[in-house]
Image (cartoon, rainbow, N blue to C red):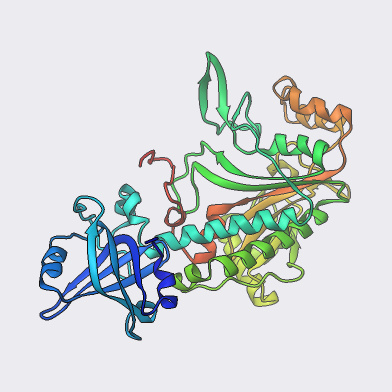
Length: 428
């Protein structure tokens, strides 16, 4: 008899079936016992009345893996409206050692450090696994939205010979006796691949050796990157980003609606046109000094409240960041050279996406590196490609964990990350 999932039981009333999963909870009453089995699709209630079967059930511990063969009976009070009767319960392994928290409770009450220390079992709780289902759906939506626009998925190296962003916050490693670094982003490679496919994207890990110990930073996270050629300026990139976000949220609603319901959240609507403000105007809205070079978290929160109040939007573009705060490959605004054709997208008052138009002329790269006192040699393999013809192009990068964290209302980005890597954590 082939195993079925708990979600299929509703269609098998009156039949004998086989399920398998984990002992989620046991309820041992005087005249009857209930075994709740958890599988990837949800919960199934097993009714045990036979004295011998009850005695065996009493020996099982929560999280023990079992197989149950039983008859499906309708019961409106049971999970999904059905329960299993006359069961034969067979352990598929030794009794499990119970974890240091109760997974059957509606809320996982253990502290976040305890959950992270015991991540392989804590992630079994519906509230934790729901976030990961949402993450998977978001990635599927990202890919589908860009595939529909003729983007090609690429896979780029995560070990590089020099710092991608010309900064110091990189993880150094030994590459057969030569210095190498974990990639801070696929930025250089995705630009170069515009010269091959015109439109490319990548889903992959990036590494930032920044000593942040905050609720919004990780040393390794998943970046959703896209780059497209033949743009007029950064606004073309913003339009593709808006389409991509709509696709991601649509996929989350369609593919992970149950996970959203588990967490009690709804996916927000993406406006047909996301409101945008220039950096100089954003400073005024946020009440920041006019000479502020960047937006602080408090400024981002103020802008998020403003966008919701004035435009009814959970999203806000901030354009025209100062060139001094953008990487050397960023294209300046021709009308205001001190400002860039770059942007950030705020989601509910938190920076979610960074993007913009890039330089595409070889001489401009030489000038940009010289202006920042950067030698050309470490970037020769990258910059040289621009001697051979590159179109005007631009792109963006979405932090997946930030997206999911903001969507679900998580207080800490680690709540939506399976095995986070940060300033203090390398295990499990």
